Length: 397
Image 1 (cartoon, rainbow, N blue to C red):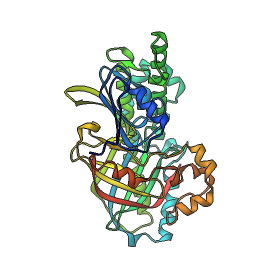
Image 2 (image 1 turned 180 degrees about the horizontal axis):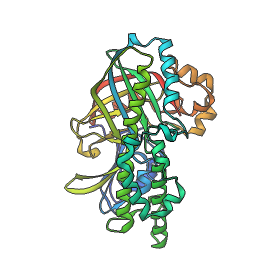
Image 3 (image 1 turned 45 degrees about the vertical axis):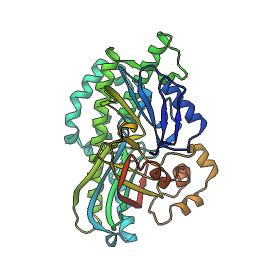
Image 4 (image 1 turned 90 degrees about the horizontal axis):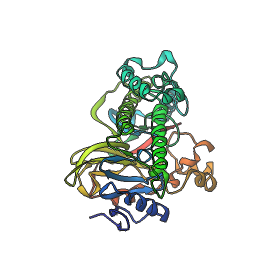
């Protein structure tokens, strides 16, 4: 049993897999647990920390309702990883520097996207009809976002804590691992339906401790449209990671010896909603900063840009709704990190990693995150470690 704390003040209890949680996050979890449609309990993973509306690192099962802000605006954000036939001996400093620069040329990062003539139109073709149907129902979405932009953003990284890494596992084998989501189009979909839920809450005078806990009722037109749109964005996010993996592998092949990517690949969301069966009920499960950890299911739990990451196998623990943490979890806000640490701190904490070491990424310094080893120790009942990875190169937006 790894449950460390329990909150019992809401409509349902909250089970927490860590003792490292601040009072604001505890209150946010209690607010979630007080919603009338939450099923059985709320599960808080060991990387839990304050979020917008719902706590990052929380798993929320609901009946006949979904809270769009709990899913968030980076719909389908998640991880992908693949092992290659390369080994540590193939990665000297010069080759890594060349690969680092090549990835920077081939994969748009931050707010950048592919040029129209380089956009992966063939991979994106299946997404067009679904998006057009969504835009026809909600034309305001189209007016706020270039409907063609999503094609050019497919296969791009984004900014913040999104990253591309080359890692070594415990046997010295080379892995590619990356973290990204549904980019601008997912953000617009999420923001739009969050606003719709808020408008309904105000119109119906729903008394909420936080307006970001506004929900959509199953059976309503907005609910059905949201489920369609969020499903589209989650599929887009998964494809975005697949396209990026291909681009990164191609960049590596330009500077490294011939190699293959083996079948041991993982691609998993950690900000999403899905229909599942738990505690004798069909429910909507929102994982906000958590991954599915069904029995035998592979997942990825990354540390910070200077720490270890893990390929894990789920144990299917029902108390976590078959979930586990999505990473180390932030210990402090980006603003706090920028105030407390300098570029010299960043250089020290990312020693041995080819990466940016400038003021623009100080907010991603390893010390701003929780200890990944402690996070893993707190969820031994949720997952088992299959591989331990340590990055040697990290690309950030």
